[in-house]
Every structure is written in C-alpha cells, then in structure tokens.
Image 1 (spheres, rainbow, N blue to C red):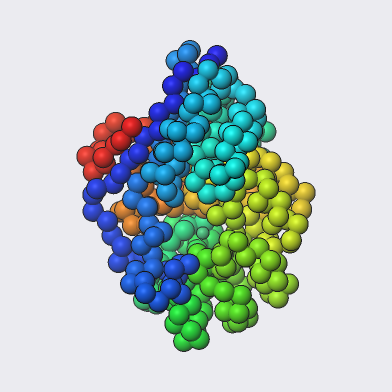
Image 2: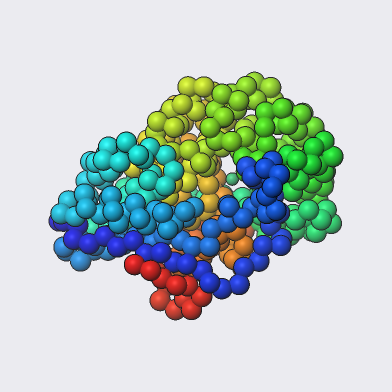
Length: 389
Ligand SMILES: [Mg+2]
C-alpha cells in the first residue's frame, strides 16, 4: 500500500464571531500597547489534511492554532517525503518527518503539521484494519470517558455562578474557569480572579472539580501570591500560569504550592515532555494530540507520564484526544469544549466534522465498531467557510 495523495485544506471562517463574552488573560496582557490581548490567540480557521492511498483509503487529520502556516509546511516540506510511502509505517514516517524538519522545526507549527499527518495515517491504519484507533493503541481502559466542561469566561459573578450551576446540573463532574483579570491589573485584579474561583466553588459545592486556566498570562511572582490566595478553594489544578518556556519557574512554583500545576498544551514531542519530567515542572500534562506529534508521540508521552505518576488530560476534546484518553491508564478524563457560536476558534471543529463525541451526563463514549478516528467531513452547512486547497 502506498500514499498517492496528500491534500492540506484550509477552512477559513467568514461568518459571525462572538468575542465579547470571552475575556481572559493571555501572554500579551502585559504588553501595554495591546488593545485586545486575546486577538493573537483566536484562530478563525482550521487545517484539515487528507491522505489517500493507492487502495482507496482516505485518512483525515487536523490542526488548529496557525492553520495557514501549517498548510504551507505540509505542502512544501511533508507531502514530498510522504508520497509513495506505506502509510501503515507510522513510527518510521513520524521519524522521517521529524528528522527531515528538525533544523527548522522541533516545536510549534512544524510539529502541528506532522501531527495532522500522523492522525491521518492512524485513521488509515484503523480503516485498513477495521478497528478504532483506541483499539490499535492498547484498547479500552475504561467503559467510557469522564469529561470536564471547559468554559466559564464571564467576569460577571452572578452569571458565572449561574453558568457553573448549569454545567453541574448537566452532569459534569468538573469545570474550568478562565482568569478574567490580567497581570497588568495588579493586586486588585488578582483579588478579582480569586473572587471568581471563590464564587464558582460556592456555587457548585465541594464535590465538583474546579480548575483554573491561566493561559500563559502571568509570571512567577504573581503566580506565587495568586496560588496562596487560591488555596481555600480546593482547585483540581491551576493551568499554564506561566509562559511554556519557563519550565524552570514551573518547577519552582510546584515546590511552593499544594495546588496541582498543569500545562504542556504548548509543548511538543517526547523531548519537550522529557524536559518537563526531568525538572519536575508539572503534575498534569495537557498536550493536544494535534500539536504534540500525533498519536505516535502522544502514546510515548503517556507511557513516560504513567511511570512518573503524572496525569495526562489532553487539551481540547475532539476525537484525536479521546482515543488517547480511552486507551491510556495515564489519563483519567478529557476536556469538553461544547459546540457554541464561533468565539475563540477551539469550537470550530464542530462546524467542519461529523462524528465528534457529544457528552451525555458529563461523559462521552467512542464506538467499538467505527474504524479509524471516526470522523467524516461535513458536506453541508459550509457556506460561512472559504476552503482553500
Ligand atoms: Mg489551556
């Protein structure tokens, strides 16, 4: 069997966008000239890659974050080295792609591009073997998957509480709150961020997991003070409080607090996670399979994490992460981004694919009989997209 076609498609959203309800701190918050510190982190397009074999199998992969650049990497660097190869040799092909791009790749967009291809190759492998990907990666470790609800963006405390109660009533065992007040708002902003965590905890009681998202928006000094103030609210974790390159500072912070620290959503490959393990930087890894190096690399990182007692709770819901969660004992739950109007970009996959798992009573299920990743491309309702091949 040979790869005969690789097509990277850019889905660019041109429809309505709702940004007013999604206020949160970002790495750009401390840059004073910014009027909208979130703008750089919204992505209103999505990359879909199709890999077709000479036997007629088509595998689908995808990438978010910076899809236009990812497409360029696939078109100019990866497609030429994939054509004619056997798509089932996923280990060999990952290594070939990684080593071919290592001089200018290693992290970021190039690894996202490799990830999209790797997901498509595993989709093919599943279709050829007539098995879901999770079955190829070790099979089911749990009957279904617990998820936590990933929203709570609003700064208004009454609606924040109402929202939190609503998610609890829907059956979710956990939910994640954004920090509405950036670093530049100083101690007064920190007090308001703490207040947000406090009112959510009060609204849902002690038996629900409450997580807090920092989205790379703070620094070590702020984070120390912040975590101390958050201690009474029994957070399940505090996420990405620092820039992803500040591995050494995460390690310092972890010694300073009892609140579990999570991160890794912007870390790449087994090498990046090796460094996080070596430094003892985090309690929870949150790679996204469509950024970290695909299923091939995700599996390795799960095994490393398992040996170190580190939990893996991937970024984003989406089928590519759910197959990893279902098949690894390192992973106790998945994130759940609900289908909403287009807001930050994370929700866009709902508009492109059919087959995404929908939560019922806070849990999702994957089919034992649907081969591959389990997604197909929508053929209707695409009028707000410009699709470029
Ligand atoms: Mg996050």
